[in-house]
Figure (cartoon, one colour):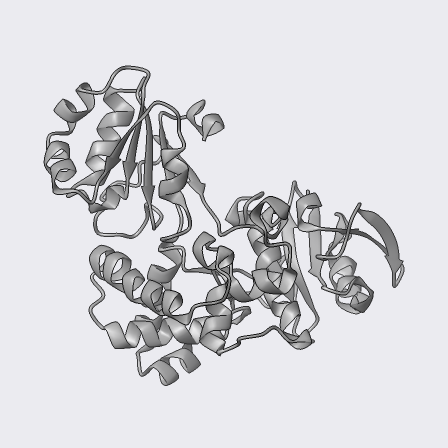
Length: 366
């Protein structure tokens, strides 16, 4: 946040509810904290110029859950343009795109940050959760992660609150049953390619409705659509994204798992690696790759021109199949080959199928 404030006076902190935005915002020293859920805050913000003029120049103003205000984008625009010496932290569950409340995305006026669920590399002894399977099963929201046992009621209540306070209020989607049916399908199929026709059939929705609901879920940070990488040649998948849920705890909840089996870890580990990559790189630089022969690379990071880093995710690094990597590198030879595993200590290099890989934990991803 400090780095972002050096570039812009308004910082937008997004993240799903209960991820810890309020706790983080309250840790800012000497900040004026405003809970935008309160009617008094809404009334004060109805006159943005008077409200902002009452803040000391050079101070820090926190507008928590700013989307609850009647016209939040107007308030933030005035703060950026008229009160540039006032540092503003605005928090919300969604991005500033495609929601009816935000008539202006504040392009060029804000710095945007996202708070992810607790990353695997953050699960060290101070948190008391060094167990890998526990992080996969409980997820990364602080409350269930630190709970002694997984409570299904937390996840059910979260989904109900998510619909009522984010989806219904911000997007006006009133088909609760249809929307939540689609969301639960996406949780169960997290990590797979999006099949709009199948989702429409099973959710009893139209294809355009599925696409609009999926866009709302992505804007609300509940899912992430990972596009396929293609360089213009033939034989590559070019149009079907993969859909990842925001948190492994909700994936295991929807699947009805109360323990983690050996076969479960691989897919869930992909989710943790993707979170680590998104914390380091803009979303528009992260892809997956698959060709029509079904050879697939888990993640691709687009660097400078002609350089593509690839990341394969394996709980057991000895299980790496070099064939998909060879197919990818035959098309795109420049870049690093990385093997992300939860069991790595100090990064080391291995040779697999004639290619050299750096084996590392998520903390050591570049």
